[in-house]
Image (cartoon, rainbow, N blue to C red; front, side, top):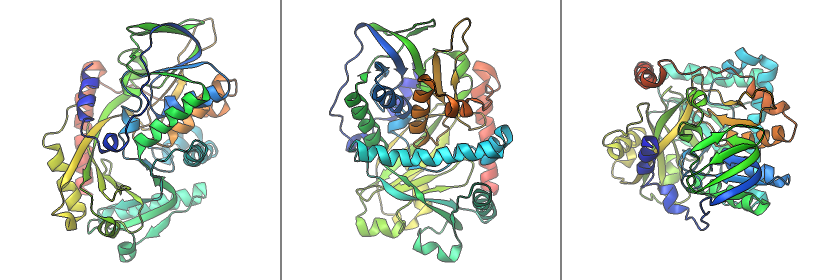
Length: 436
């Protein structure tokens, strides 16, 4: 439970939690229940699947180890961006350009799906259009514009290039050397959106249980999921717990790593001062390997994220470190206090591509599905993933299986050495970022 305990401690000072009160508690599972589909994990992927499946008339029971949205879904940077966490070249190399174009098109559908769900289910999550990708070193400008050119030429998706001379109209940071703008992407309050999806799923007929960690999974024609106080028997199961499956399926967990990412919220700046920082109002993310990301909140704060760690240990002096990074990007905030600092773990795959599929089964149809490996780029894709797995469970697996064809490998080093190996590897990438 060490990872869960660390993650819980990091969540206590979350600005998201302070501004998205939980009005609806969901009781722990008690006794034995029957379901058509059981879902493990009450984040965006699990809730999206619950909403879709319940809407198809399936009996859905969802089990969440803590509270709905208590993992990465309710604590992330809130950036809703086209594409995947991996570069398009990874998908092109594995599936070919034509299929890579289908995957990219689905990433755009994932953004539109958020807009549709917010409208259909009256989810107020502070949505705002616009995303700005920036280079903070002169040598990174070439990469930024080359990536934009590839998106336009290979995928027909145009981003506006913004050279240094035009930057003041978009962002007021001396660190930024150039930018690209996507008006179709955007940002939101992730916990408000997650709680809104939970409400929509229950209204559709799904049953949600909080504080119900799964302690055992028994495979079979009907799968059994045991908790401390009950059991669910289901024809099909979805594992959507990512790094929080706590040993249920070791083979899956070997293919993802928990990576800590952290966010600080400034004190309220006032509308005029906040707008002066990012006049376009977009979410911002740099193109370093170990990146920083930031955006303005609805109450005119700067939410600044970064400081990724790969050891599962919380960085020392986290609030002060993030405040320094914030002020390095915006020196005009030298007098501004940080009021909230929080973080949590995201699930990162070796190649940063999403890892969807089914657990192998002998002598019967595979009936245990999984969604993981969103790699810090899942606010939109998790929603689509829930829709794809619901379609697959209903017999239409074409889109789900396109993602399932992506190959994944376990992290090297085994159980004991893979974390130290990753820490050393990421130290190298930090050095590369520093050297440009």
